[in-house]
Image (cartoon, rainbow, N blue to C red; front, side, top):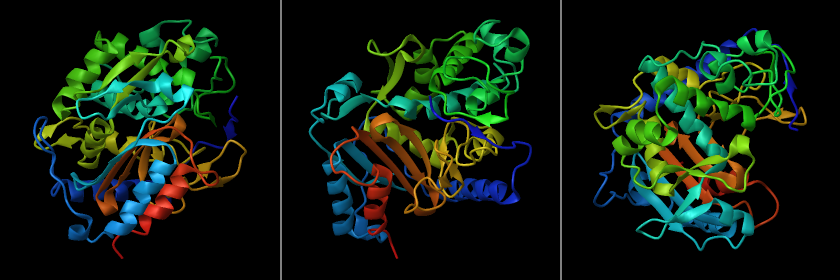
Length: 363
């Protein structure tokens, strides 16, 4: 079982709040100059040199991604494709569990593992904005008593927001450990209850929700929830998508919840809270999003930042085997990486890729 981080959760340092506000303002600044690709037709590109990047060093960063068993990498600069590379599917039996097929361009359609969490966070904000739920509501309002192994009274204290922030106080077997919002645990089985909450609150299945509210408006034509016959029942559904589709989702977040003139998530307060520290026990975690430049508390109790070589305003979706979506408002970047965790030994994909990529950035 992952370690539980124990800290006081009663106050939020002013520096943490200001950092989140700053990152959100940057997203708004870039929104005015973003390009949004059509659903059909060519996605506009931009050369690295045209926007001040070093093309050779950028190519080396993409080479490194390939050496580390990536299946595809897409790099957007203000919405236009600045770099894109696809590789042979990793020759790995576990990877085959995640591979769902290929799109018309031959790009892999993959279950993105826990990167799905950030999509659920956005759907939760949309459901609240549309009046289907409040994140302050008890989970049992939607799932009924007995959805966990806690007592009825303990269960009633666990809200939707506690699931978003990984602070429910439950362990991975749904057993009661502590009062909500006093301990932090990266708890994937309990997180999956959020999709059940959304379906109960809206009366829509997860594919209906995602297609109608996100995929269709953004032109994500190869994105759907797919079964995981190899997984335990609590985590038996995954979000499958392509690198380009996931880039569209990231671009919408980069634009402050908009897709061109269309508002996707209009609740800017929720959007800000989603991309800021959701609790004080692990400040590098928002509402199911990872935040750079803030204290990241590891399972062994040590702390640092998520990616030392990346800009402080980076936010990320992260899934098993290094499925990634990175957003860096200060550089106008949206970067998607799919594939498997393999290839070169040594530093993590996060560290190795960003050490290579940042060398190509404008000085």
